[in-house]
Length: 142
View 1: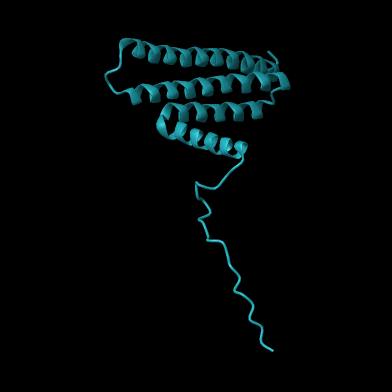
View 2 (view 1 turned 180 degrees about the vertical axis):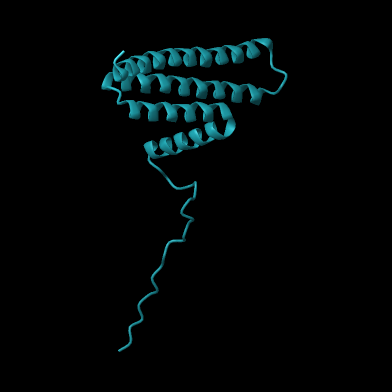
């Protein structure tokens, strides 16, 4: 008895990282977020510096034993600075795509964006100074 079963057909294989496969909207969004963070780190060393300093501040907070409200203020402050820096990078990218011959209003917009990052940074420094000064005074009994 011989059985002549038809050959099993398989679907053509596609690469595992193929961009043409369908993803759910939230997975695609997370992928875009990851790529955006990567571009943020690679595009401008300022973002990396802010992120590094943020890591040092978080480590100092862990060592000093900050309270829940202090952690909330610390995380919010650092997040505001990193977000402002990302928006500044978006603005720079848009202006670069226009070329070097953009109007003065575009240059003013870039300067205003830089000022926004500076204001966020100063606010964060003041907030963190208050938090860490209060904590150091509590630790050393002053």
